[in-house]
Length: 121
Image (cartoon, rainbow, N blue to C red; front, side, top):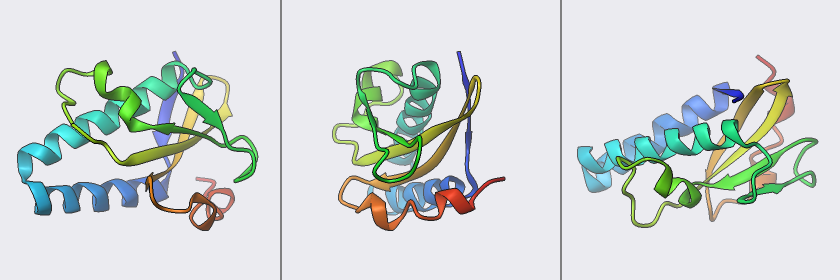
């Protein structure tokens, strides 16, 4: 199984997503949402070109997407009725996936992924 690492942009995305989640729905909801996000990252690392992923070359070379709703069954602690975020990721080395961004499904990824090529840790 490949490993994954979050980009610097993802670290900020996750902090904001989880802070908003806790503010709106409480700490327990935040914990469950964090669990589904982690399950989604593990799932794309395990199968980066899986049937629930999409090639998104129109956004940036090598970019793929995965809606976190497809990770609900992967972790019993990730009980979230309607997850609303999409992972954008790419393979950066054999067996290493970089999670480039985590964006709300209503966000236009083309407006937020231009930084991906600039974020080469």
